[in-house]
Image 1 (cartoon, rainbow, N blue to C red):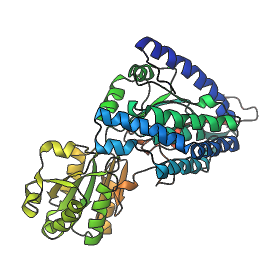
Image 2 (cartoon, one colour; image 1 turned 90 degrees about the vertical axis):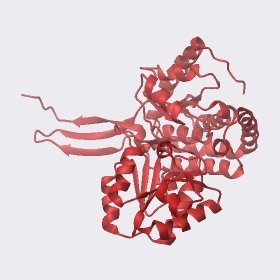
Image 3 (tube, rainbow, N blue to C red; image 1 turned 90 degrees about the horizontal axis):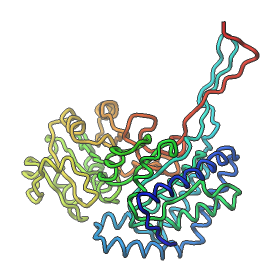
Image 4 (cartoon, rainbow, N blue to C red; image 1 turned 45 degrees about the vertical axis):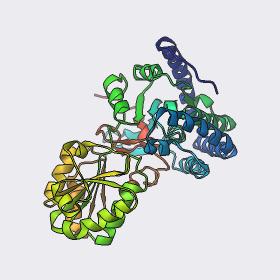
Length: 426
């Protein structure tokens, strides 16, 4: 696969050509049977397994490029594909394939007094542009979910994942073609030039929605420059709140898993809040367990009074998505202060309370207005696959159309079907 060195002018030309092919493919895909779309994704999974060695070799090139660029360990972890992750990617494609097909699903129906029968029915959104960084597996997730919902996808992966993402897209296209579906339903920009991103953002009338996945700089650029509707989250400032009625063992286990299972994902905890009434007894256990597995802690004055080993936290720490083995820690005076901190510093992504007091948990679940609110569970479950959605194209923190994990169902719109027998309006 050769890299295309795009200029601003030919990037726009490339995008227009791809979008026209995508629109044509989208119409055919939306009219295909659910069995055909399922078959295409199953065959794509088979192609991923068959070409696993090729994918690993392509990923090795990307890893070398990323190391030369000086990417952080967390970003390198996001980029890495090994045998287990490639198999997980293939399994993910099969999971999406087996999901209920949303296209044509009747959401609601009712009869009017005049005899009209009205149905609200799911329809594909159209052409979806996905812009992402580092993680080549997003190529598989995004492509599969778009196909499942009858949409065409135009993908632009990160410059560091050029070879991996391109080969994974080839597997998707291969699966579609083998199932008799248009392979142009999944297309990927084979360029590192950022002009292609600009062309996508300005493609009003060609692309129906943009879904960005990446760091703050990418998301801010998309939100600032897009002339196309956007599903986005700015960042994952995830909080784990240890309430005074928390089970100590659960608190330790959940803190370690929420932060350290994978530090580079958007569901990783970035701030730990703990009630003052239990800080002296419980914080040393939590902190020691985190430090033991390599986590750096940055605490406020009250937290450092309990655990002087912590680094001092600054105001900036409460607003930082580390995506690394760093956790900020603050001692709070109860649930009200905890929820105020989340409202003031959070990003409406995912927040969790650890408590055995059901009434307090219910209040937290009801009053914290994040896309995902949890009780006594690791924040690392903030993932469409873990929600039973097969995969996700991202987690939207907006309030329009889709919120939370964006799966196949969220990549649909709807239309109304109205059936009559000759009614006229007086």
